[in-house]
Image (cartoon, rainbow, N blue to C red; front, top):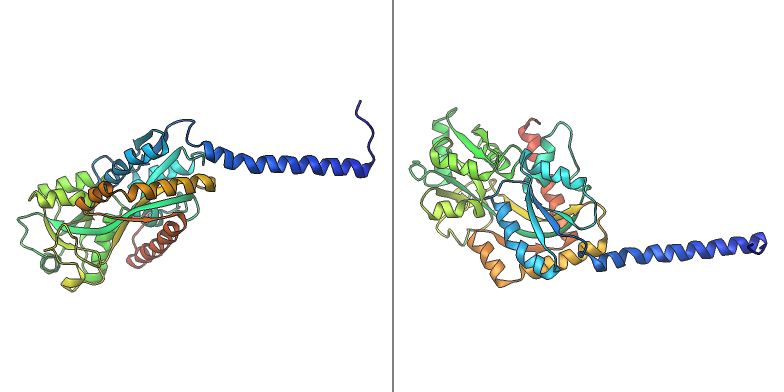
Length: 334
């Protein structure tokens, strides 16, 4: 039988036990983070079909990152709803570091604002780990189109009002909003034609079903260099080193058509800070590798690493920009 203790002594013992439990719990999280990721392979979800710029980024960092983490990384494709299907699935995943997502501009700064009810809050429902890259978009058309610059395309579109369209990788994608930005700046009303990903959008542009696409260099550079598409402009502040002869939109008198896309890795909300920091540090090492930087540069993207806090702040600023455009263009939700 336990010895009788006065009330004060019993209270003191309870406090001691609670303090011991708190200390144990306090140590549990860092210990788990130190052993991560030994339990199972890491899933890296891509919210678009294979062959696009998001897939390229995922595949480029996959092998070196898994070598540093000493754990297999499996790329899984969950395309649909402009990347939001994958992002929504991530919000339901356990925040244990074993389910991650290759995030990009569309589902994290644009698409949620095009829904009658937002399926998630891009600023609250995720753990931002690290930005991978950012880069200009390229405006392209078919080689036989009469326009050789974006300014000439705008002039051509004015004389062919009601007959012009632009392709996108889906409603709510960055390619969709790039076209709407061009409409807003120029006063045009070019018709939007959405596709399920960049690859089919490119194929129909080559086939003549559409006339314009403004997408990432990772998607379009091979087609431009192969002579299947013609570059009209780049949307960044400076020219693309892979296309030095192609002027920026600003150089062509369209300074409002300025846009950059981002890519990075995110996890579910409330991931342990220790895991976030470990992932961010290892991702930073990967992106500092010369061969990784060369692959992104050859694809028309610029490695632009930012850690967790800076990446989250960047995404917040991008959200404000695109949400404003959606309001001003009165783009209707699905």
